[in-house]
Amino acid sequence: MINVTKSFLPPIEEYKQILDGICQRAHLTNHGPLVNDLEQKLKKYLDVPHFYFLNNGTIAIQIAIKALELKGEIITTSFSYVTKLHQ
Image 1 (cartoon, rainbow, N blue to C red):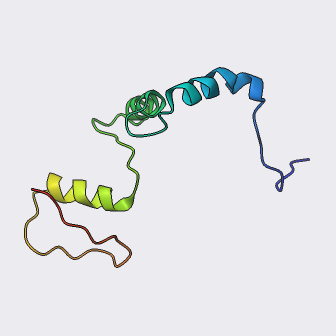
Image 2 (image 1 turned 30 degrees about the vertical axis):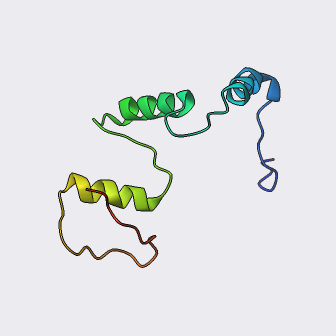
Image 3 (image 1 turned 180 degrees about the vertical axis):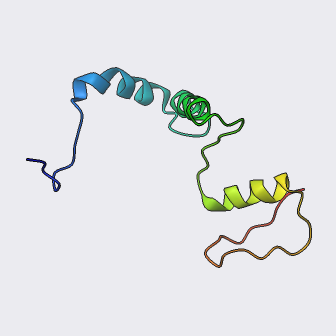
């Protein structure tokens, strides 16, 4: 029987070393070693030249705007954070 209401949690012993390293570094995001490792593995698996984790959609939109060299007024979703691009 597959219990669909109970969360699957791996045995803590298997992840103790990883968790200890996270706690010692106190580096959870923004180019931490685990984030960088996962980015590189996904980049290779997906066979793409660029792959980045971003902390929100606004940053993703800003990167796309800069990459496409868009200028002037840009209309986007109303569910975006209002911000000014630094150029």
